[in-house]
Image (cartoon, rainbow, N blue to C red):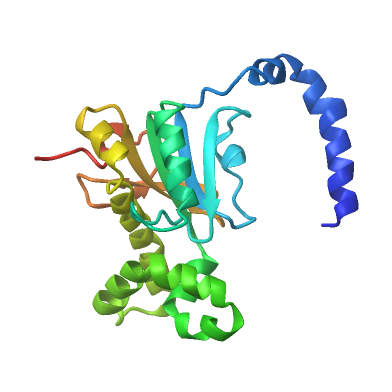
Length: 223
């Protein structure tokens, strides 16, 4: 897709979508009130508003390579600043970490030695903040075929990022008082389906109309 195509799209947006939703954008010009923070990958195949069928202003979104949230106290943590702002300033009620199938970051993580020369910044990012995922997967599932190993890495990475979220004082406090809920999702590109982690079953289950949402809630504080 060329820049000319993007400019054409901008004009189409302004002349059609914007005009038909002018009241919405007028309202948004006075501030934002999203109730959901969605943390996902930078991958171009994922469009948070498209797959959730939400409007501008409905989601506060953080994106990076591998949908990673560095633990609290990490240096230069823009993701942490985004989480803090979403929870403190916007009073977010739900946080979703959404991984996806065929994740290039997780493929790279499983063969991280190959990244050091070609993409040193990607290597540093994954080595510093996704090493727990790599170690867990390779120590416990190295007998699995490569496609299965990748799927496990994608799932475990999302759950580890949920654990990282819990290291933030504001998240810990809100979880304790029941003011916030954490959700772990996997978006499957080839099927358009989303799988949510069900705590009671300790596995990812298809998120559809019959999904028992309370069972998907994770991060409830325990003494």
